[in-house]
Length: 379
Image (cartoon, rainbow, N blue to C red; front, side, top):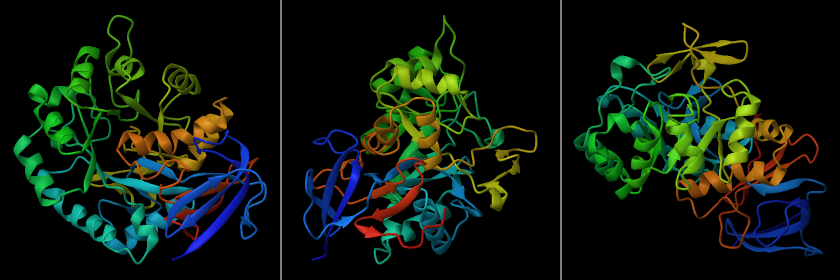
């Protein structure tokens, strides 16, 4: 049995403690077993004035640095997870963009191999894979149009059978899913359905929520615009309590006012990075380039971001979002949205995934994954 106690001047993410109050946590065998306030136990490690919060959960990350998850070996993927941990990410969904139907097996096998290596705690950060496509609609964005296709129930069922429990999220367009058959199939198999790269109407988006969709992928980006007579997917995302919108808060994909609107309209918002491996020069089959700190296709189309989730937290806090809410948007909200009920909050029984932040700069000072401190932070 391994046990440790951490104490900090500011605790966020514990239902029993006012956000920002001092507190302490007892960790035993990778789980939180006690969360308290007041004088910490004498054996506690004092983190000083740090902000201690649940580790971040990134639902959409294609790669980082020169490691594209679609092409990475298990060791390279593990190195990418360590680098993400340097930005506070303790759980993530490596994301595979639109590819030929026979092109998913190889990366899924490699990512499954990463998850089967419990001797390295950082590898447990993979919460499952996010398939962003290939069943997309009228707003493909950077996805190869020639590879976008109508949803295929047979292929989808076969993939889930061959990789049980691996696919955690699939982004699809309602208009690409006749009768919403694949939406119902995925939801029934425990896969979170996200609406994205779509020109669906508001009514079509609500019908998809009726069928089991629960997320909206990078709100405003890759979808029809909000219009006062046809609010589209944006309108559904901001008004239907079943749909959690995710946002790329790099201040490039969304104007600051758009971010303010989202946080004002919706209680639950998930921050995602949609980060790509600019150093690899590709996202799956899509060639990209870095242009002034932004990832683009050759024609200038945005192709993911170079954002990190800790930077996303800082950006929305600077816009006036309270720190506790910004931290929840990077942890509790995304965790709950995909059914990760064992993390995302600081309470007994949850996995000890933690991030300690500088109270002023909100930069990452320390990270724990399953109770194990990550010693090789690579910001």
